[in-house]
Length: 537
Image (cartoon, rainbow, N blue to C red; front, side, top):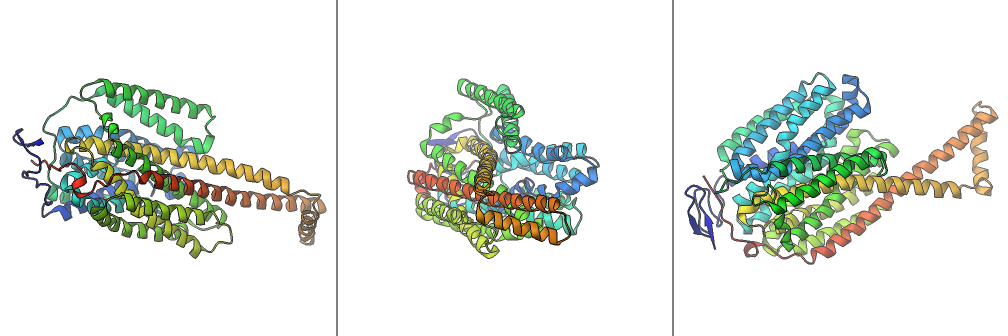
């Protein structure tokens, strides 16, 4: 087995080293290199969630409505998601360090421009610029990590990398809520500028270049069909929670997206130099890891999206208070990530994944008992238990799959993995939001039917309410209307809680399914993966 030296183009035995280091030990600066990568990815992922809390403030400042301001979030998600497939080609063609630096610079410039946006349209345009950089950082960074570290040390490296992936979405609402409430809302963007500049020069100093030894032609039609397909699909799916699957706009965009992606798949399978190497899916371990991590992503993003509904709408908490309740789970998941990485390097992914998903399933099952009387300390305990499970299994599963990808296809593998993760997150939010809505409607109808006015208990309670309102000086007609409104409101509240509990049950079942699938994972630790050859300048 041999590999190709990037500088000379000559073959050399697998396991030998070049200027960038070799499979036996990362370079002395690998710690700082990891820091540079983690900072950039943390900023990029944070900006997918930090903006949401500031939207009402931005609506007021720019004088726009809800549908207009939503494009500030939508534009970022669509552009960053659509650009992920091409990152593997860009890294192989121009060098991963170079693309990382350019992406960091674009993201930083875009953040600064967002901070000075003077209208909603200018904000949307600047968010697109920001997304061009942010969308490339995640897959490029992951590919660099797998080249910087040999298989026996990738678990710990990916565990540290996973801190950004798990910690950023959970801390976004807390940080944003504090900034909007106590500081200037524009800081949610401009705070990236000094951090981005520092990280740019740090990365320039400590990162080594990784570049494919052979240049390939740009797959233009693959790029067009993948970008169009992903953007329209993600947009259509993103509208499902608001309009439902039967809406004409949703059907149109989802159909266009699916058709474009089918054409994209056909192109990639037929041409000699595809932009995204779909033959990687023939690798059983890699494909299984994608399926399991997609289920895990669906669970994580869906619950993070729905839980604030309970905390803010029903419990009446502010955005900052909601963020503080969600913060402990983020801290715990960040702590668990490197622990899981170290365990992966010793025992592989299978056992860790099964244990982690079992913890996740248990926590979600317990969360199905949530109601308005649940103490916040109990809810935090359930969330922390879930964070232990998610933190344990997320990175080992992805690392186990990526360890089976040949080094010369690592960029393709990370691009494919992140593309599927992005789609899974969008589908997870849309599907669980729709499931929640359907179950809530079901419980409203069921509870309303149970509230039979001819029932002695209901009639007695209704009369008490009506008499209380009349005692406050209201007429009999007004008191009757208010009593009916109160009972209807209680039905809506109870149905909302029950709908959310149903979602917890479904996600618990999905966790069990993922745990069963994890039993079939191969332990690609240490010697289990392909021999790593790290390419240097």
